[in-house]
Length: 359
Ligand code: HEC
Ligand code: HEC
Image 1 (tube, protein in one colour):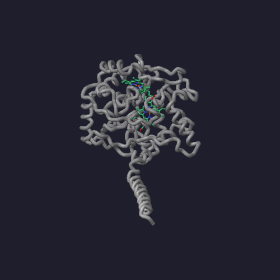
Image 2 (tube, protein in one colour):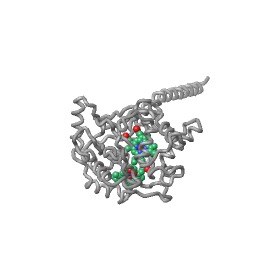
Image 3 (spheres, protein in one colour):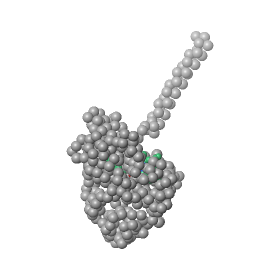
Image 4 (cartoon, protein in one colour):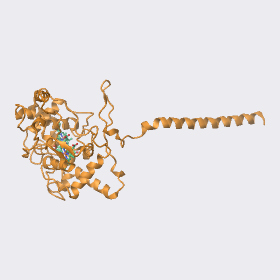
């Protein structure tokens, strides 16, 4: 063989070896990198508690995200879950004052308070319902099923009645809530479910100041009379009511100022997310005080919080184990109330500031 032929052969052999090395390199790199690229949505890390790198201010928490309804194999089950989602999103169309199935609620949608059908991080989502119910709730003093919990929101937040638990509507709502929480380990709390904490003010929330906040940041949608606006076909609200006859009643979870302020701080004005709150803490508490001092339906629930030592500091109806007024329990300042609770706790009584909220 002449020299040039040999050179050509050597060169093409080298080329092949180079390509092989490249392929092996890419394979090795892929194997190393792949675990970091795969989505973590379906894994159980959702149940992990927040891990905030406070030094750098970076939040490494893997927040809960719901599984995809499209992944349900059984067509009947999928249909039920989809109907449940529809009922949570457009409750009023089916169950409101002009509901096509039943007329049993005030015209609000579950989604008005459980944003995007109960899936938004710190938007009062349903991530921890399937994993934590049945559970003991101090408001009723009993162990509650998911049905009982949904029932409560119908009777209080929707100021109405719940559909029968054996009927298709309740079954569908439960199926939906159970499905979206099915990727959280039993007994664990999904990161980002419920509300994000908000520090108490050292003063009472100020409704006069809150009125100014309302006028500049809320009224354009929720209206000057607080009653919101209906959609064109009048089957549901475009902007839901914050007070008045069609709003939630005073037995509802949002009637407690801490729940209201947490919801508003991290979710309002509409489009706000917990990462970019628009209101200062003071504005959130004050606007809540203003709204909660307006008229709304009353629900007599004298049996709520049967164990007085578990009553949250901001439940605005007595009796209490302390001597603070109903007014202070409604608007604060809360730190002195908490201090008394702590003392009683230390004294052996089982007071708790962690007593769960109610919807
Ligand atoms: C741009 C319009 C807009 C503004 C401004 C706005 N909201 Fe809302 N708000 C909405 C909509 C829409 C919903 C219902 C969300 C849904 O159904 O997805 C809502 C829901 C709510 C709810 C829960 C449902 C209810 O009716 O009780 C509260 C509480 C609330 N808003 C308070 C406020 C407060 C307080 C402000 C001012 C700081 C505010 N909103 C500003 C549009 C707005
Ligand atoms: C006016 C606002 C509002 C409306 C409307 C509303 N809820 Fe709620 N809901 C709440 C609040 C507040 C809570 C308590 C949140 C907490 O304790 O962290 C709650 C809690 C719940 C919970 C328990 C969540 C948990 O993690 O323990 C379920 C389930 C629920 N609601 C279902 C519904 C359903 C279904 C509807 C519609 C039929 C509805 N809610 C309508 C405000 C509302």
